[in-house]
Image 1 (cartoon, rainbow, N blue to C red):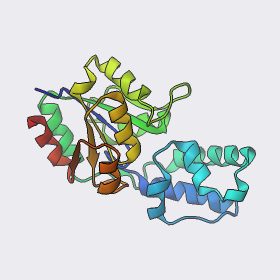
Image 2: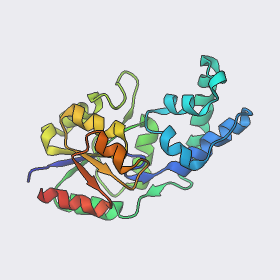
Image 3: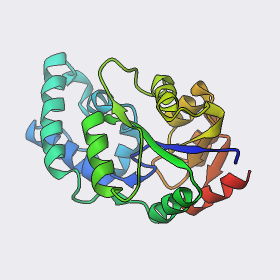
Amino acid sequence: MKYRAALFDLDGTLLNTLDDLADAANRVLASEGMPVHQVEEYKYFVGDGLATLIERIVPAGQRDEETLCRIIDAFRQDYGAHWHVKSRPYEGVVEMLTGLQKRGMRLGVLSNKPHDFTKLCVQYMLADFPFYPVLGQREGVPKKPDPAGALEAAALLDIPVKEILYFGDTSVDMQTATGAGMPAVGVLWGFRDKEELAASGADYLVRHPCEILDLLAV
């Protein structure tokens, strides 16, 4: 088998978490008297880590360090209580993961979501699958698109990078994969479009999770 492992982004790839992220962020903004945003706008706010998300949603004139830190803390508290209200695996993800597991593929997660929330989501919503490693954004490790996390995952899997497919829904994910030397697979059911993924170096594009199984024959 050419590919031995599948490393996944989380939000927008395995799980549709957009509503819970947007709802928590908007509640915090409203509590601060700041304008809220449409849920669809959050597709372009998320993906680069929590600090960047908060910086993007706060009005430009109010992005001082004290305010941003306060809102980050408030978001963590709110999202920590509501992260699982609407979030679910995308249609077809469970069947796809089952198929990969039956074929002997190792499964891992690499996300820019804070590490504690990444682990929580995987343990709660994808508990039937043996994901290892599960890596979110951690202090001291550069966030994606820096390839450090992907290379760490490859080392933990003890599998050469060329034999690990990396799946994601944003340019950040495609850049991460190519930077690490992993084949980059853009998923089209997530937060961004085909043009962004193709322009960012996607080796493959898939429209439905079950198409992923076809890549094992490539």
